[in-house]
Image (tube, rainbow, N blue to C red; front, side):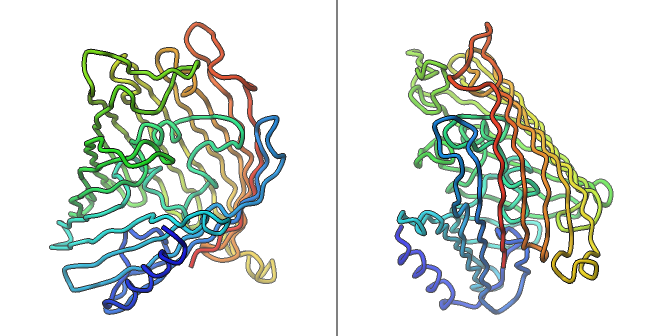
Length: 379
């Protein structure tokens, strides 16, 4: 999709019908409003250093540039279109990040049809504008690194996909379940992996949310990711063209994004890595932050809040697939000029794991270190 086409789609959505933003919107500052079109956007400009010799020492790029339109067609029907323009800003093509219709029969029962997020895990469910660390997982230019979230992306357990979901809220219970066509990882193309995913979240006490999720998908014999250290594909089994695999996630969140005090988020996931060789993985990720507000007077209005943070994420894979073994540690600091306008500073340290038998999983250093600074504006 070109930049011109993406902007035209947003304009048509805005002019077609009155609207209100949905709770599932990417931008957390978009509240629900009846009888109008609501627009939102997100701009993240990132400076990062490389974790690998041979890559450019520093890079300044537009990490995300998103425009969103939320449209209310009737009391029953609403919709959302979101374009990702970061690639278009450097001569590439715009992407359709989200595009769906939502039929709200009742607060307890709704049907979402189109491209949206899979209901699997709280890390993936956290919107880009509300991430405590800069990234959900490991990203090192010039080097491969995979902890929990990168493993989930590569296996297409996390991320957006085209599908149909049933979702709703009943008292303290929020749920979503759906069928998805799928894609072979975040950077992969569309693929019919016949995926089912579901998540239920409860709030047993004020300020605490607990979630349980499960997913199941079809793996093909030649389906990426290619996990062996030598680059050969896993799942080269002549006994069948496809096999099913899946995962289970348990997550918890204490506190809320944008509120003063502690905010903690953790997730544990286990599942299939390669169903043809009966390889599995287990991983965990946790965020811990403490937000201090009331700084406007003391800083002359420059800062409204500061938030020191720490993130730890790890994945452990069975078999000679050390590419999916690693630990990511991230100390950081968020400096807020407004609720969703901030300067984020992160130091990512990735400790690469080893394959069974002590073999090095990939060429390169066992430890990768990269600094990131990111300016974010969400509106």
